[in-house]
Amino acid sequence: MLFWELCVGFLTLAIVATAENPYRFFEWNVTYGDIYPLGVRQQGILINGQFPGPNIYSVTNDNLIINVHNSLSEPFLLSWNGIQQRRNSFEDGVYGTTCPIPPGKNFTYILQVKDQIGSFYYFPSLAFHKAAGGFGGIRILSRPQIPVPFPPPADDFTVLIGDWYKTNHTKLRAILDRGHKLPSPDGILINGRGANGITFTVDQGKTYRFRISNVGLENSLNFRIQGHKMKLVEVEGTHTVQTTYSSLDVHVGQSYSVLVTMDQPAQDFFIVVSSRFTTKVLTATAILHYRNSKSKPTGPLPGGPTNQIDWSLKQARSIRTNLTASGPRPNPQGSYHYGLINITKTIRLQSSAGQVNGKQRYAVNSVSFKPADTPLKLADYYKIDGVFRVGSIPEQPTGGNIYLDTSVMGADYRTFIEIVFENKENIVQSWHLDGYAFWVVGMDGGKWTPASRTQYNLRDAVSRSTTQVYPKSWTAIYIALDNVGMWNLRTEYWARQYLGQQFYLRVYTTSQSVRDEYPIPKNALLCGRAKGRRTRPV
Ligand SMILES: *[C@@H]1O[C@H](CO)[C@@H](O)[C@H](O)[C@H]1NC(C)=O
Ligand SMILES: *[C@@H]1O[C@H](CO)[C@@H](O)[C@H](O)[C@H]1NC(C)=O
Ligand SMILES: *[C@@H]1O[C@H](CO)[C@@H](O)[C@H](O)[C@H]1NC(C)=O
Ligand SMILES: *[C@@H]1O[C@H](CO)[C@@H](O)[C@H](O)[C@H]1NC(C)=O
Ligand SMILES: *[C@@H]1O[C@H](CO)[C@@H](O)[C@H](O)[C@H]1NC(C)=O
Image 1 (cartoon, rainbow, N blue to C red):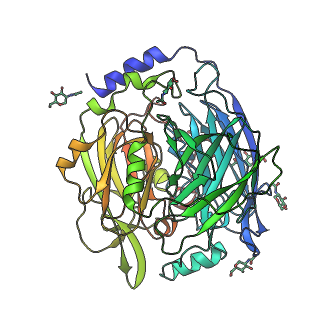
Image 2 (cartoon, rainbow, N blue to C red; image 1 turned 90 degrees about the vertical axis):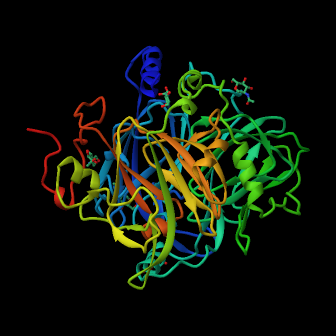
Image 3 (spheres, protein in one colour; image 1 turned 180 degrees about the vertical axis):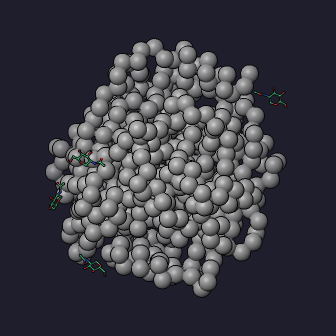
């Protein structure tokens, strides 16, 4: 049977009731404000006065109506890492899909967290704003009637970790705009604070959920809690086989949920986050405080794992889907055998770094992304010629010199493709695709060949939206292209993303049906050559 028949068959069974899904409203004011995360004053981006921004709490299928007022002096957009925006790439909030919110103006995002559960985050997508804050957690809880494969935790914490510069984002951006590389980050933050700035208070004997997202700019990070084990339960919307780890590698852009039981004597413990695979190890700590504790945490800090890539690779491979656990719907994996579907196409993506006209650039298959004057999705919708060309990035590495283009790769709706990320460089890469979750079927050192497929996990790989690629290694993913739109495929290494290591995957159908894609939102901002168009026919 074909994949699409499997899906359609399953959908018919699964749709039971179609009561209108709840709406949740948010009014957000985005401002500059002084923050002191590493002890020095710098200009941060706050949401409703907060750094990091407020968490979004939601339940599968909720509609989120988020009115974002831009009180900065620059255009601004938020994007929603891991939120699939089904049929609705207009709301994705990246340069290629959505016009920036002008200073002093507002825009209301209308999202639905359709058929999703799990831990994600939002972040500012333009102008290197991410180095100044503006990010926050998103959690999507299961609907009450859907079983969750573990008892409700005593509390559920969002833990946003990331590397950080003491320098203003405007200064960092100016370095990149002049064509230079950035220096290494200065430190690590846990929920916006450096050393021991954050305390998580717990009761002895109880079990807590920690949702850990790496919202940083480039470093892979290791997360661990002194004296405690962590049971991994969820990765970017997939309930995992519940394996116990004493520390966890979280690459840039990734999210993980762990359960931790407070089974130690009543005292305080260190939570440690440290940079991975860096010559100088950056470390931040937070406090795990037992409510009945009478003593401060004592050193030494628990050490991180060995710097050998193999340790991390082995851990990554041990992360698998619990095939009997529910997802957003009851036990969907049972009818969803991604490993049995034939691949329609293999795309190989190789990243590179180099100079163009004496300026630092980063590329995918030799193309370094250059913005156009109009968001690509709007150009597509209004059929405005000359903004981008489908096929402006090759589907295989060419090994050629880096050049600039507004790179868009075409892809057919309802095909099932394989993407192989190839990393010839000496850094850990992290790749994210908007609009989708994909199966991470394999990763290994060396060069990928078709024979590498024999080692794929075609049974219980995790479905997620961000995957790492180790140095001089490859990672292979499978994607069911079931979401029409213009979708950003990017590195999460933010200086590289800013200097061109990204492109758009245009998943296309000739169908005009709202079953396949929603029309442009009524309140869509129009800019560039889309200015003055109508968002609805008269
Ligand atoms: C946003 O905050 C700024 C600074 O506090 C204030 O001047 C402005 O009126 C606020 N805007 C909205 C829409 O609340
Ligand atoms: C941030 O940097 C810019 C440019 O260097 C400067 O104009 C601004 O005053 C700085 N802001 C703060 C709060 O230091
Ligand atoms: C801006 O905010 C107002 C309410 O404060 C709202 O009525 C309007 O729809 C918003 N504009 C957009 C483009 O979403
Ligand atoms: C998988 O999920 C099932 C169903 O909730 C649960 O009973 C089981 O313990 C889980 N297994 C593992 C290995 O995590
Ligand atoms: C996949 O391709 C093989 C060989 O072409 C064919 O026999 C098989 O039926 C196909 N499987 C599916 C699920 O379409």
